[in-house]
Length: 203
Ligand SMILES: N[C@@H](CCC(=O)N[C@@H](CS)C(=O)NCC(=O)O)C(=O)O
Image (cartoon, rainbow, N blue to C red; front, top):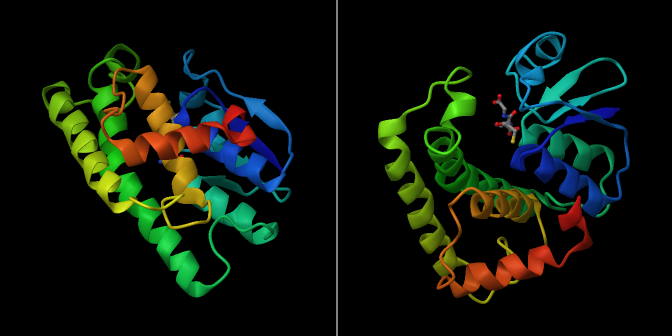
């Protein structure tokens, strides 16, 4: 297996997930700034033109953080970062979906339509007139999340899961591109420091 990786929060999430699980496979760096991901031969591997992508021994290529991480979790179960029971897995998937739809997507689209416009306008549909509202959507949902994680060590409870890793990679990215979380969100701030202290955060 090998992982196609690059700068950016999506491949970072997969690298962090692998570090937590002790999975060590070859990394192939793709030049995102130079557009290597948007032309052949990479486009043949991942027609979505994005990183990360995981190439299996039989040539199958998996893209999308959740598909890649769920696959890695299944082939290398301990410690599971998805869940050991149907109930735990459902809770993790619920939170990953909420974080993806409510925080990751609006944050990333807000960036692509504003600070990232020069890089993305010829790659994907950007909506500059929606940038401020997209960023506000992510910000408001983080306030919502802050209330819900009160008293918990991690997003789903007391165990680290994929939901924490995805959110961490994106809050770290957001802070670097002008979407820093409000420091008044005490639960999110404490959770972020806990995540940052994990050795996998350097992945
Ligand atoms: N939904 C995808 C998103 C992948 C994505 O947006 N990757 C970014 C890197 S962080 C990318 O390839 N951007 C460059 C581009 O779209 O040209 C996932 O879960 O992996």
